[in-house]
Amino acid sequence: MTKKAPAAPSLVQQVEKLFDLAAKSTATPLKLKAKLSVDKLFELRVLGRILRSYSKVPGAVVRHVPPTTKGASANTIVVALNPASADRKRFSHFSLIDPGGNHLEAWVSVETMTLSWSIQQPHPVPLAALHELDVAVFRGGIPKYPSHLDVCLAVSCKNVFKAQKECVREVLGMRRETAFVTRREGGV
Picture 1 (cartoon, rainbow, N blue to C red):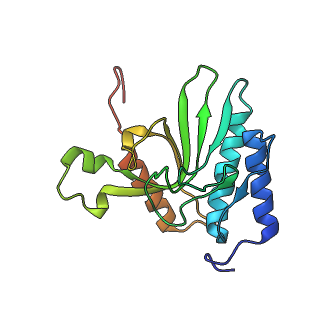
Picture 2 (tube, rainbow, N blue to C red):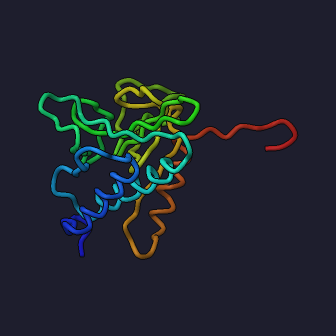
């Protein structure tokens, strides 16, 4: 099976059920829009599992936020099929509210501004200033291209049987471009 192979309808339905469980949908069930590749469905499955875990926290709320484009359906999940901005007009995301009322957002395939760009800020902004996060949870109210400081959780999804060296390099690069390492009193 190739990475771009279309996902089987039965697998799509299983992932849709996972989103319904996480969002505790009582109205019309959530549906995924577009024909999804096996890899994109894998990312959505990872997101669904994260949302499901979050929803089990007493008092936590997970809510699907559909695109704001006129005619968008409230129960249709629309995700970027390639790296994209956090464009609320075009794509869905999930609102996460913790028991204390703090607001987070979960997205798929969002490009973030990297740490090295924020330090140097060359103009015009080079493509290297952006790093795609397959699945991410951000602070609430992020801009189209969130900062590395907005990232609360970043997940790199690899739909493979055996991890390759390139996967490890990518994860290390993602870690480097989205996190600070600081010295603490009495140690590192």
